[in-house]
Length: 199
Image 1 (spheres, rainbow, N blue to C red):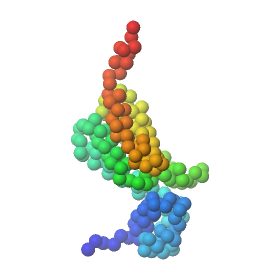
Image 2 (image 1 turned 120 degrees about the vertical axis):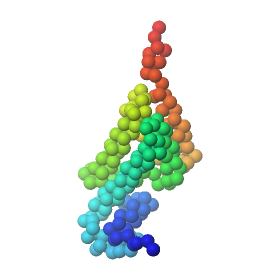
Image 3 (image 1 turned 90 degrees about the horizontal axis):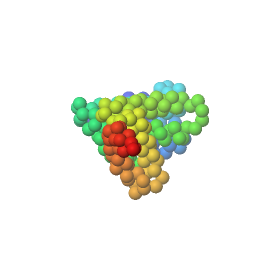
Image 4 (image 1 turned 135 degrees about the horizontal axis):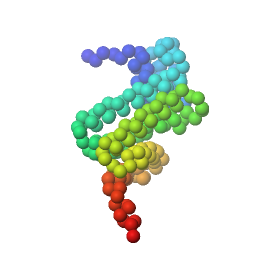
């Protein structure tokens, strides 16, 4: 028999799910406490405010990314280009399976007020992901790793928004092909452009 989660873990788990389904503003602490089979007093004992709970759910979600990178490296040891292609495949699969989009990007859009503590969590996560992808691009030996990393990131972010706005038959359906084309273009020798332009 599986052990029952501690109240704090149940609260975080249910808050993640409810925020994904209804948005951060669309769900209150009473509903979260009820779904976690606890009460509001217990929730506030673990989290001083709803904002604190929001930050914890975003940290919880971002921690899953570390496991993703570890799995990617283990699946393609010592082969950065295969890891980069694996990143594209994994993001495409996530795009197909996930109907709510990126939790952190959604939170950034929803929490517009300046100074909200969640923005620090979101920014730190996005910067860390950017550095990991940029390093992977550099290790793969592409001509401009920073530009390719940012290109792939923008394709991913754009595809997530596009799917929410226009469904899976919109531009997001070409996410993988767009990424593959971008990678292929950056794999071309940097000198070839100069040679073509030479008189």
